[in-house]
Length: 326
Image 1 (cartoon, rainbow, N blue to C red):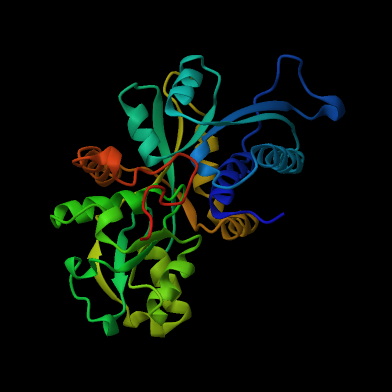
Image 2: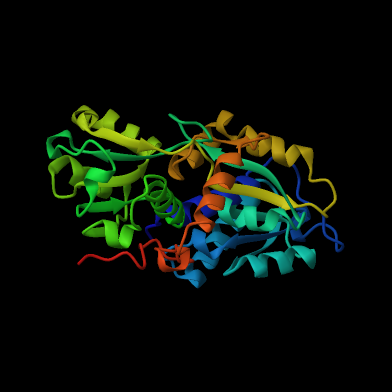
């Protein structure tokens, strides 16, 4: 079955855990049949990671992959994968000590941060750009648009990683900083693009006036087609991270070997294949300050005048709900 990008990212982060060389924790019943140790992994992810994917299919497919990979490492894995709809549910699982690993977006993590229930450990890194990357607003120079204000009444497409909410939020914050109207009234139409190229190419060919896309995907597209370098960037966000792999803060210290193996996955041929499939280069530790730009973006977004009337990103929905064409 084909996997959409958010599905790939969640599958990827848990697959990395199963590829770790450290032995799984042995169960109270001892080795499983055949002498293989048994282990248990309780993973959860925000529903925002699963845009447009049937949850039952996602859980079943991930469990099969986990079991196969665990057998390759010489143990039997008893895994559970839960997809939760809200930060409140994630918080309840953390408080009940019923989770081992979490995959959440930066926005969800920031909502959980004050609870002191989760420790951010890793994030993904892609070249060019590394772990932190910017969102950009490119236009076609032939459109004669040279400022954000010049896009009034034009058509814009928005592409974003994960749930798609970051690109939308940055657009609204950008318009507010430029003292312009919310996107719903400023543009003639503002629509979500399912893939980065579906956002970039219409601007290049003139069927859209502008787009919001992350700079990593824009540079990759330009490497494949140097003509796309003609696009002119009107605005650029601060570099930020969007995904967080975390562990419960109340848990016993997480095995050092597990984290080290996740970090060194790119050094192993099979690990590089997995990283390639799931469209990332490597996992890297979250450094002090890495989340500051995301914290600033979401703080500014929450403070927007009339925010609820703007295009508030919907959970589990990459479409720009609330931003429509005339």
